[in-house]
Length: 365
Image (cartoon, rainbow, N blue to C red):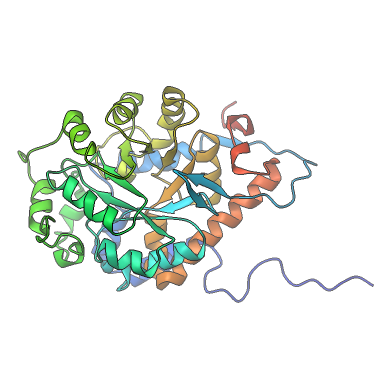
């Protein structure tokens, strides 16, 4: 007698696809806030290029490989990740859901991975680490004069690494926000920016980011400040081999290949296009995180195969947060990881370290 099978597709979950989550986020957020998430800098050429870059690759099938239950476990800087997907340090998170990064961290902890906690977030480093200590392992800071004092605070709070955003001496020329006269409540960016105990205030940091002529650091300044850090640090916003090499010379232990999701320099190269060149320049051992344009599990697969150690999601995590708080972020991570595992099975990759460019072919080849 033939066994009765239930449907292979989910029928009782709130969100069946990532597109549903995206639409739910759009419905939940005010139009100007959703534009703040969706938009990029300038004419948004970089924003579009990030997505177009993924379409230039195809994954090669490996029939009869015998791979049935691939493992997505990996590690970065000694931190074990059950899935090679971290969440990004996006600021102003209470705009998207009242619980902000508290919800993100709880969801990330549920999936055994790591969140990068923002400096300009709605909640403090300490608050987020308290609710999800296994997930809140990396904390962001900006390379301004307060960096050594903030790094010391992050170390005291129990974090394992710092993430220094190197591509944002000034905010990008973000035309959607300008057209919308976007004026968020700046208190939503002030969880760490209190103006006390060595921390800058919100006005100080955004005065730096939003006006021309503010003091801007160079690599020598960063190297001197980083010499005082007592934690390993990651340089976020590296888009050229030269910047990767300068990051390492300044003391970075890892890098994030990123064009800030198309929100800074426009037009700029797609992050995915630059990833193989940067991997070739720094060699096989350096941990490289990748962001900018990740929307599907196939995007995760392609980035890993082209040289990333793990990926970082920003907008996709915000969509989940806006749609359903921690449950929405959890569903995003679940869908991305499930698709990645499916593609690993079909391409014959049993582990993350088996993903490389031999499993890909250019779309025009």
